[in-house]
Structure formats: C-alpha cells, structure tokens
Image (cartoon, rainbow, N blue to C red):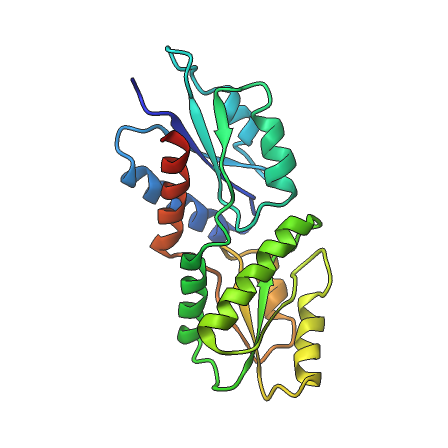
Length: 230
C-alpha cells in the first residue's frame, strides 16, 4: 500500500525570493520522503491552488487515507480553519494537520536570527507575525513570544505586520516608552515578501530576517505528516 501523498501548502507571495524560499522547503521535504508524492500548493495570491491539488489526488485503492495537507503557516488562523477545511471538504480521505507553530524549534530559529543580527545586550524584542483576525492564531503568537522571552531572557511583546492590534510600529513605540534602550523586531515570517518589507520600515533599531532558509522548518513539516499517517 502506497503512503498517502503530502500536500505542502503555503500562503503565497508575489515576491520571487519568497516563492523560491517556499519551493526550496517543498524540495527539501521531498528529499526526506522518498517514495511519497509531495505536492506544492497555496491558499492565496497564486497557484497551484490547494483545492485543485487536493481534488487531483488519486484515491487510495483500499479506501484509506489518500493525502495529508500540511500548512506551511506559522499559526492556525483563517487559512487553516476555513480555506484548507474547505479544500478537503469533498475529500474525507484527505486530512489537514495543524500549523507549524507553536514549536520550540521555531523559537530556536528566531533565536538564531537574533544572534546573527548581533542584538544589543538589554534590547527589548518585538516578535512580529503576519497577523490574523483569529484569536486562536493570536494566542499561538503570544505563546511563541512567551517561549522566546523565557529562552532569551529579554522582554518580548508581540506586534503584528497586519491585522490585529498592536501593529508592529506601535509595539516598537510602546517598548521605547517603557524605557528600552534599543528595540529589535524579531521577524516571525517564513520568507521575504510584503510583510517583511513592512517590518523593515517600522522604526526598530534592528529587524531580523525571516525564518527561511532553515532545515528545522522542513523537519516540522515532516513531523506533521508522520503524525497524520500513523
């Protein structure tokens, strides 16, 4: 019996660097799963659209599970709970896993980005996700910020690139009002694109790069897939 196919589903971006970064993760996962059909898909901006990819998956001959969709998204917001749920609605043989985060390996990547940026001792940190109207997604971002604060020993607050309050620029201002000598925005985005550029213009002293490239992201995708096919 063949293993279920894997659909790695990203958000989508018009930035060619962002597209290349996501495609590289899919290729990395493909190399980790020899013999498994691994497909690239997106929920927004450009194709291949996840609904089309799921619809094209061959059904398992034994009537069992045919596919697993792993969201290449850092938190489970609207796209996971609505868009991906809709994509598999007519395919009960295909399951959607949880998002990539919260996961301590993602915190490790953020810490590495802070180290690479030579963050000043005593700086205040703003963890900057893309943002979602879904409260559960916001709670996941706050949990990641809590873990980052525990690991780094620095004060960490959340500021969003878009959507919910506080916007990242307001979070930076609030940190300065609270007396921070320097403010660092820790990007909690997977890849370069519109939101990363927004972070870079928010007025922080330092803005770290996005999480990719990093092999730990592919490892999390692999773990989500393996948990779903057990």
